[in-house]
Each structure stands twice: as C-alpha cells, then as structure tokens.
Length: 457
Image 1 (spheres, rainbow, N blue to C red):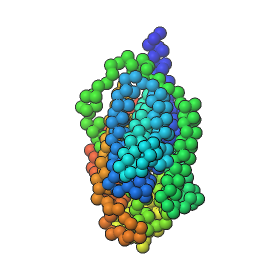
Image 2 (image 1 turned 45 degrees about the vertical axis):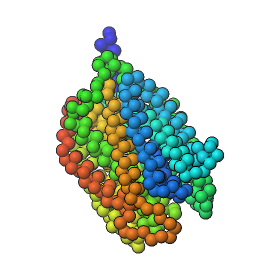
Image 3 (image 1 turned 30 degrees about the vertical axis):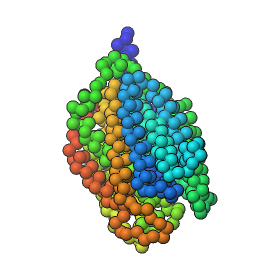
C-alpha cells in the first residue's frame, strides 16, 4: 500500500505543471528583482551623487555582497536540513523591504545619532546594505531551491526557471519605468532632491514587489517532494558529493561568469551613458529598460522551446558570442555616435536572457533528482556569484576618480571597461568552459517524452 502510494506521488511529480503554478512561482521573486535592479543600476551612482567617494561607495556595495554570499551558504544549509521554503521566503522579504527603504531613503544611522559625518554615513549605508543582502539571499535561495522540489518533470523545471527569469525582466522594466517617471517629475537640483528621487523609487518599488508576493503566497504551495518517500527517507547528501562531480565546477563557473557579465555591466551602465556617452538624464532609465525589454521577449520565446542538453549548450554559446560582440562595440563607441547604444542595448538584452536562462537550466540539470542537496547547490553557486561581483566592482571602483560636473573624461574609463570590455572577457571564458561540458539525458525515454510538451501547458 505504501509503495503504491509512493509510486502514485512519483508519477504525479513527473507530470508537467500547469500554467498557474508556473506563473505564481515566477512572480515570487519580484520584490527581490525590482529592488535588485535599483541596487545594481543606481546604488553606486546614488552614493557618489550624495558625496561618497567611488572607493567608499564600492565598500558599501562590497559589504552587502559579502553578507549576501555568507547568508547564501547559511540559508542553503538550513533549508537542506529543515525545509520550510516559504517561511524563509517571507522572512527574507521582510528584511528586504525594511532595509532597502533605509538605504535609498537616506542615512537612518545619521538621523538616529544626530550627526551627518562622512564616517557615520559610510558605516550606516554599509550596515543596511548588509541587512538588505541578508534578506535578499534568504529569499533567493528559498525561491530557487523550490524548483527541483516542485516537480520532477525536466521541461517544467526549465519552464519554472524561464518564467522566473521572464518576471525578472518585468521587474526590471517596472523599475526603470518608475525611475523614468520620478526623474521627470522631480528635478535633482540639490542633494536633498537626489535623496527624494531615490526615496520615491524605493517606496514605489517595494509596494509593487509586495503586491506580487501576495500572488506568490496564494498560488504556490509549500513543495512536498523533499518530504516525500523518495527524498527524506534517503540519506541527506553531503557537500563532498557535489565536490566530486566535475559538472559542479563547470556549472559553478558558468553561473558565476553569467552573473558577472550581467551585474557588472548593469552596475556601471548608468555611469557609462551619462558620463562617457554624454546622453541625457533619462538615458540612465531608458537604456537599461531597452536591455531588459529585449531580455523579456527572448525569455518568453525560450519558454516555448523543447529543451535538451544540446540546445542548452548551443543557446549558451550564442548568448556568450553576442556579448563578446556587443561588449567590444560598447568599449570603443565614441560619444559622438551615442545613438548606436540603442541597438547595442537590444543585443545585450538578448544575450543576457540567453546566458541567464541556460545557466539556471544547467543548475537544474546538475541537481537532477538529488533533491536533498539542491539548496546547497543553489546556495554555493550564489555565494560565488555574490562574492565575485562584489570584489569585481570594488576593484573597478578603486581605480575610479571622483568627477566634477562638466569635467572631461578620457576614452578608457572604468565605466567603459566595466560595461564593455570586461564582460566580453567573461563571455570568452564562458565559451571556453561551455566547450568542455558533457551533458547526458539520464533517462532518454523520459526525456524524449518531456521534450514533446511545451514549457507552459
């Protein structure tokens, strides 16, 4: 009787998911995504505009990334041990909302201590940056770990990842729409106006993200596969199991490189378009919006593809090649030809979607049916992502000088390197790692059946 019930649960878990479970899961990362878009696009610019030196602004960013990386490992371990995905998700979301409004809403520590000293401002922003990233990591790991415990169907797993990525694009587009409206309505003539601009962006972003969280909590059930007969009754997978798999290191490298490509370029593109290309203030919302609009469209197309290991590798290779070409063009683009940034932004958007969807798909392929260790995999890979991005941005900003208004910038600036050449180098490295991948469909008959179904049913 127990075996029959277990077989019934297993058979149900291998069925493709419907549209509603996939869509409700996909919106569960919206608060993280919309705040992350603002974080990576505007944090360094905001901190420097209110008076922090580039190196100190990078310290604030780095403190958040270090806290994020450490919390990612801790959250992954705790979720593997105790489960309760949605509980971790709720707790992390609360921390994100509170701390995000404290960073972009002004220096809360300065208000509490009654001083506006430079050191207190740096410490205050660094503290809330760390709190924000702790909450962000708890939400991210719990949300990503749900994928392999919601279904055993490989096509549905890719659909969940692709839908999540599509709503990431929606969140980013929403953020840039909010920013564009705020920049148009609130002119930044003084430091207080800049704080007001980003305060409104922060509050509206948090409200929008929380609305989507309600949909997620209402439509997504706590994953049960991890507590099913085929999961918890088996021994918990140790870290050493993953460290012995060559595929773990390959996927870890590719995921880290994909995040470096997207996050480093996103963090510096506002500097690049306004200071290097000398485009107007609206461009720091319009150009990122174009990038994420194209990413969204490509992600929608990717949802309907019938996936196998060969296509994962092929599309990852195409995305990396597109980034090599676009990054090189961005690096050498003169300010007199800044209008070419619009088509380049479209190419970058498509490349970002191809790289991110395929690397997240590779994570699911790595985990497979080993559900008892899935949170560690997502946690450890995210740890590499956070630490590498934080260090990369800190190193880049350490070479950046404070620029006065109207001061002429040279051709080879930090923002040019960080937006164009360096992501291109990461893409070349990703191509080399992709060429070494050897992915096999462990169950060809089941894989063939799964690939006959669309990603969304």
